[in-house]
Length: 255
Image (tube, rainbow, N blue to C red):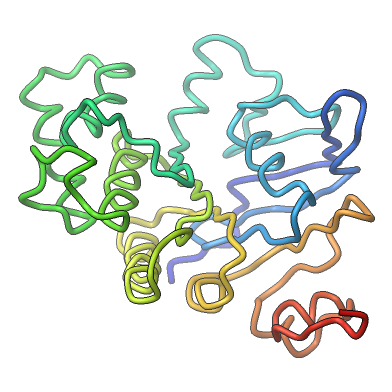
């Protein structure tokens, strides 16, 4: 894996919440350029909130979020658009537009954010679909392909503007084990071949062990990070017993 020592995402003293309720309290961490970084934790711990903060969908209460050195919280206008163009997002459901073909779905960000001629946008769309193994499905509608193929198409759309970072929200959700494993290997191949940094929200242990270079584990009670590191090492050596139980699929004594 082509991982450098350069942080491409820097979270500093981030506090976030809704309606006066704090969900994440004063957390800090870095994501390194080229790594596959996974955000973990139980229900309600703030995984989705954190992802929304980083991609600029939801403003935190306080703190800094630096994307390749630029603060996405304070950035405005063209400066903010420049930062957002470094980011691609695949949402849990895929979120493809059902009335558009796969080619048209991938073409949409190009139409929105570039001045490229139509032929160039169509060519880029076909190239992105080929990268995720969907060559020949360009004119298919989302309803005509499988759930796993929809996830691949959504990743292709996330790559449309050649982002440096791609965020994946529960990529394996709803997929059978074989399709999920194929998606894991696609993520690893894209990270290796295209030098893309991936930030993944998931709770699927098999995927975590396969793809993650490093993880952070969020905790609902402390509103913070209770473990971070390589998942294989945390399975054996995490200081927090709940984290070890999670990675080893052990049931708590009181259950």
